[in-house]
Image 1 (cartoon, rainbow, N blue to C red):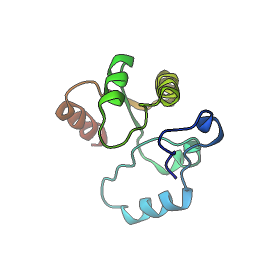
Image 2: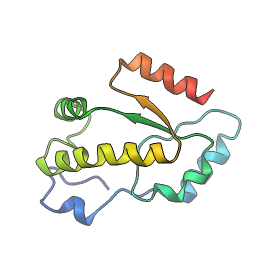
Image 3: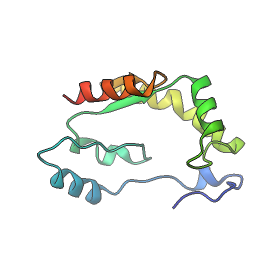
Image 4: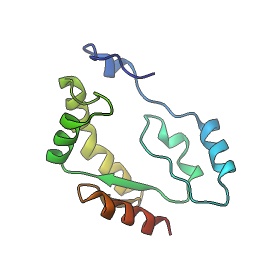
Length: 124
């Protein structure tokens, strides 16, 4: 479920985002002969990494992250101080994790067309 808006203090310490392996496995089976993307991250994503042929990590610098969270209109995540602090903490940690896994790292602070081209090139 999505966090309440605004997020009460400590919410992120008690709840997390999880991925359901069976649902991802079904998606893999359904898309066996085409390129398929699964985007985002979850606290238990190690449970599904073996299902993927390629892992791509989109990275941004702290200033870009702050700006995007402050100006996003699709949802309010990151606009509450506790969420912003968590995102700023996770950002370099996630990059380091994905680099250690040998993921393809793409600078997502570039224009969206360049980012998309880089993702498609990696998928080829």
